[in-house]
Image (cartoon, rainbow, N blue to C red; front, side, top):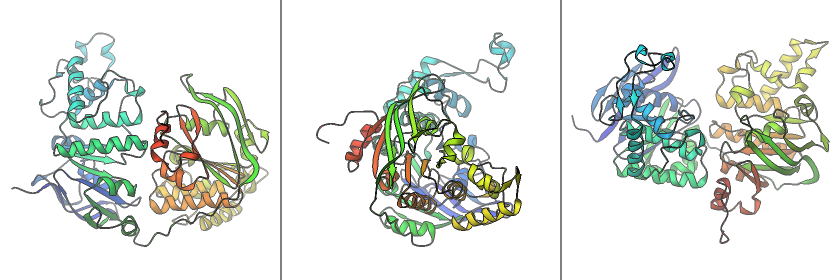
Length: 536
């Protein structure tokens, strides 16, 4: 049976108990196209991709690859049928080289021997290994590879698809952009004809995004097909050929890129118009809230992660810090909050040098950490309990060390109403909430204390358009209430939209970049630690 579609889903439904995650979706993918998938959190994007990749199986419906009905029971089945996936969080072994990572992936997933001359099935049982090697599980040791052939394969794929990367380098030493290349090379090593890319530009600098798009076009020229999952509307409109929008598990739109504007696509995603955020002119008060002088911080390997940083933030402003992940932002924020020991320098809050996290909190500092699931909430606690995880709230609801449950419930219900947390049930486990509503719990807990300073790190990471807009509005209200906000984010567009003053953090150094806020190219160069040419 001949078909114009390399992939086709017919009336696919996936249920989890009574929850319908994917609802009767039919979807076609043309050979050689870049097809973008848009949708809010919970719209069904991840579930749909997991069905295509064999992690889930449809409750109803059928999946065809090049016109043939397939029953994908695992990622191995998907890979055997030419489907590869690059996850948002990379699946790499930092202590191995680039070539070793590719060989490891190929040894695990290679179905035929087409690409695997580098593999040798020499180990059948751990007894054949020496004493040191015999500690390895027999289920793990299935293949040995020839290093020179692993390097040769890496170099061949790199040259063919114009993705230069040194096969000898350890992955842990690579930039985020190069790590992403390795992930794509892994998929190409098993000859994936369909590539699923999950938020592929989330942590890339502008220059890296530009290079990445060139790679996608090279893949198209080789007749590869790309499914591009992203919430960055501008990038979707730039790189894709067609767009599909999901809402509440249903497909609500498919069309050629450019047929709908960004605003119209947002309406399809939300089912309603999304109003623009109104940013008032800032009224900065010449009173420093946060004062940092000569701050240096060491990482877990004794390397300098924050290098001699000095800055101030004032009332009535949002100070933005842009940068690619892993350039010291996490350590910078944690040192301000007393969570990371300081090697040199000082941090002052309202002209007072405070060291302990508890006292920093008591002196009016709120903190939105970069990962809500591990450091922002406790998943096994209720919404009400999570809302009390702030020293100010906790002390208000306790009397002689005992929590007054009625006071706690009343306080929680008030925050739930004010910050529109859904569903509005204080006794519900916070793990049952969507990512956007979990972030609302964090925002409610931190801002309801009316802090003098808010330190927010990647506050909209993983959020859909409406949830991100809620967070942006909350930050602007903090600023308009003559408070101070330090916004540290890898989302450059977010930093540019919200900040009054702009910095870039690169390799632990903090660089003033307010004068370059109208030049994405210049900011991108700063993010990569490079010098800005005089003509910019």
